[in-house]
Image (cartoon, rainbow, N blue to C red; front, side, top):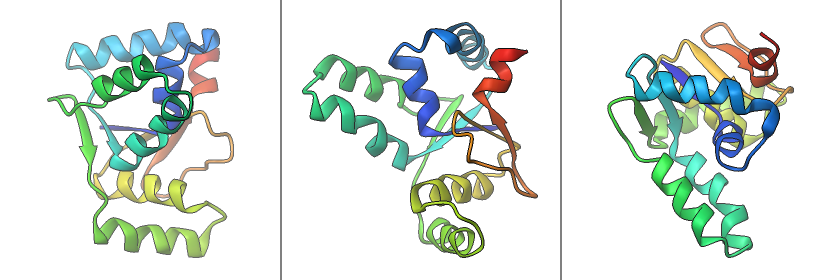
Length: 138
């Protein structure tokens, strides 16, 4: 299972031409059941800030549609276990709390990979981090 950071959903819905081709392939794999994806409930709160601020109801609705649980898309609740893991991660890294929550969620779900466009995000012993830029260049 792959973990998608919030910024991946932003790339999917807000039109970043440089990532469009690779994300189209990734989404096709999800739709075909070839790739299972997880993300945190935190992602919902993070992606909705801009559309709510701009009163962009169409974009808000698009985010809510794409972030619906399905057989290939898991939206993981923020639990006490995840928060405790996030605190441990924050104590030993420079990650901010939202990123620590994302990493802790990926770890708790047993995700093998973590897809992000955040260049400051580094892997750890349990989850391989893949930068969206790396996929674009392949």
